[in-house]
Image 1 (cartoon, rainbow, N blue to C red):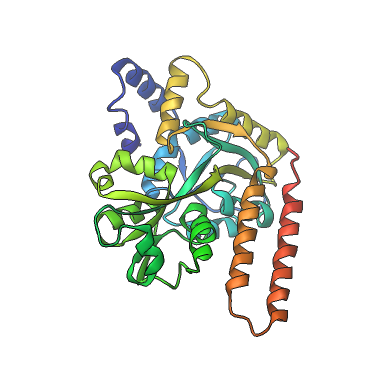
Image 2: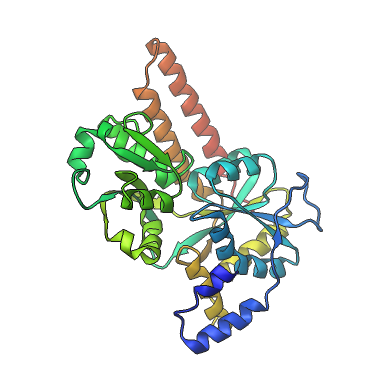
Length: 348
């Protein structure tokens, strides 16, 4: 919480006092703990946080909102904040997460494989329905032009996201690297796999030459690391990617999922000191403007991206014969059809 409170330093005095007074009155969120796959009415709702910076930083950003959510649904809310997509994915697979903030591919897997449902989608202040994947490099030569990257990727050091990351891996691979006959995992001199923040810092500090990132995270990076930002430039940007979702386990009764959705949709929309305080919380959360109601159908763009990447990989891979490749493509088509069927479930 101390990390979060320091972010009010630049807020005007009266508003800061009202916001801090309100937030300090909120109950603390309990530490994360494991539980059974059938949640009881007394057990904490375990909220998993997609890592954006560090685990502690992500948790401190979410604590005030989750404390209010606990009061709104009249249940304790505990927090699971991790350092990697893989760690969060494993926690979901072990049924240690009941609700989570997830980007497209992880949200898609949670819905189609782990008995979860979408209840809300984030909205940012820029009003765009999504964000863009980026490639960053230093401004200074020799590794600073797209032409050089395409001609000699084996001379460059890359810092990328985990394979579950939509903007850190999936979209750059699909929309930029594979169309230019470059496999991100094998063509570079070396690689670092980390968060968007650590990857951007790696390029700024000459520990890597190119990094995957996204427009939302890079805006946040500019505010926190202005000196390092001055060393960086954007080499490439993708098409728009839909924003992240909030998912909740299907085992919870529809009434509880509806209360969660109502709380999120209304959060930050009230007038007066309370609304001002909530909007400051949202701003610290990746500069969000709030949430809108959503259902599983909001993941259809994510399913299509994953499908396209799987087909691209299959088409460019080495196969013993055409029949083996065709069999793989048929399995990909069948899996995509199943996902689309699941995403048609838009019940509360």
